[in-house]
Length: 208
Image (tube, rainbow, N blue to C red; front, side, top):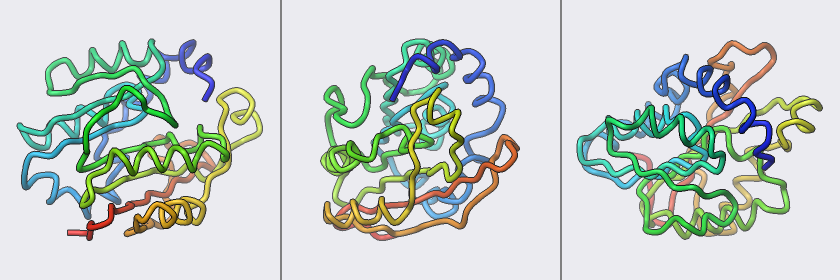
């Protein structure tokens, strides 16, 4: 992905992200996984953590959750660290598809509004790396942006995405697509923009 746009507009973007709660953004998949997240300490990875909104929310669901937030844009990461300074979130400067600075096995990996930044040719490597980082009974959650303008393709290095492409790659890795939401309106009320959330399970994962 091109970081230039995000570096230049970090404050504006972070303010926009913080205007809407993580619960409002992620209500679809949270309906299924929140009881599991509340039940016991989990190790959680937020890839493309941006302003830290989602990382802070995940950390707050259980006092013993351990959250790692990955953000490649220095300006956004600095703001994110400020927004998460009171919760248990460790920040790492790293990027898809390799995530070479991230280690361990995670019970849940969140990619919120990230997948569309990966060129199609990088996605098999990205999903293979996420598989390596996911525990066998863990969950990979992706939110897919279904509408991308030509301007955003140019300015923000976005690429078209589709649930069936993700499913094909997941199956190739031995993972299972457990849930696909219906298209959802944009939580920031941007006209014509819709999203879809996916839950992919590791080899032994089933929905709670």
